[in-house]
Length: 68
Image (tube, rainbow, N blue to C red; front, side):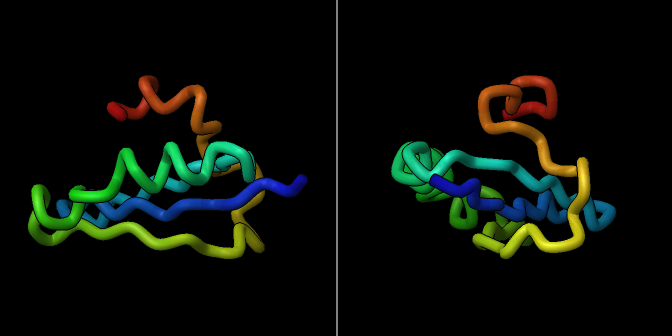
C-alpha cells in the first residue's frame, strides 16, 4: 500500500499544505474536503504525486497541528 498526497491551497498568501494520506484513508480525506472549495472561495484541493515534496507533507493523523 502506498501513500497518496493531497495538496490543499488555503487561498490567502498562496499558503499550500500537503497531506500524506495512507491509501486506506483516501475515502475519509476526500469526504472531509468534499465541500471545501465551495465553502472557501479561492481555495482548492488536488491529489498530487508527492514527487519532490521531501519531508514537507503533514501526516493526515497530524492534521490538527495545521488547523484541520
